[in-house]
Amino acid sequence: MSFTTILTEELPQGIGVLTLNRPEKHNAISILMRREISACLKVWEENPAIRVVILTGAGSSFTAGFDLGEFRKPALLEEIYQTSSEYHRRIWYFPKPTIAAVNGPALAGGFDLVKLCDIRICTPEARFGHPEIKFGAPTLFTPLKWLIGAGLARELCLSGRIIDAAEAYRIGLANELAAGEKLRERALETAARIMEAPQPALEQTKRFFLDNADRGFEESFSIEHDKGFQEFLLQKAVAALKS
Image 1 (cartoon, helix red, strand yellow):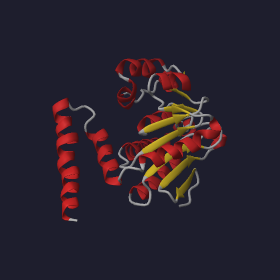
Image 2: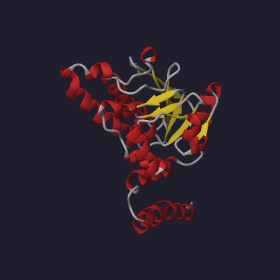
Image 3: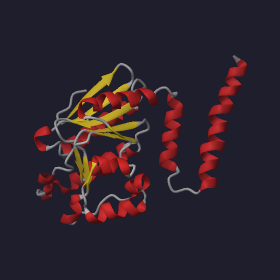
């Protein structure tokens, strides 16, 4: 695949690497970039050779968020909205595991992108926050609440406070810290560890993440345990007996 604002790699071991590639703009997420991310993920969703996706940024930033220059052009506002709506949902509902390899600041819409991934590995230079609240833009609360709890999520969303990588790790936002030169290596190692599991089990588990976040224990347990047992483990045992 050939794109203008992103770089893509399809590694032979089953890993797709998507790099935000506007380093001169701190990888600001433009209309075109959102369209290209959505298009890439749609292709990888349908490609059985891609089992895990890593997202990272070129240069010294993960992404500074949405390209604010586009907001100054009223003719683009509808397209900004439409591409934003599609792009966020494409990442959130992507059926395969996603890893954010955060190589630098991830602010505003960049923070949102990080939240929507399954796993976050960060360098010490990573920064997270919602400075856009200071300019009158409401922030995306619910995915952050699921990661770090409602109390901290409320404070970060309302205050716009920027947190560093050490605090992100302490509060559970970052799964791991890795030195800059080790970031890609650690992301690939994490992806390889994930791929030790069969793909149907990984994708079913991702469906649990998406479907059961606000269910009570009994309802979620019946889906994650009882249905999982019947559809996967029992079928596997029957197939083993027949072989």
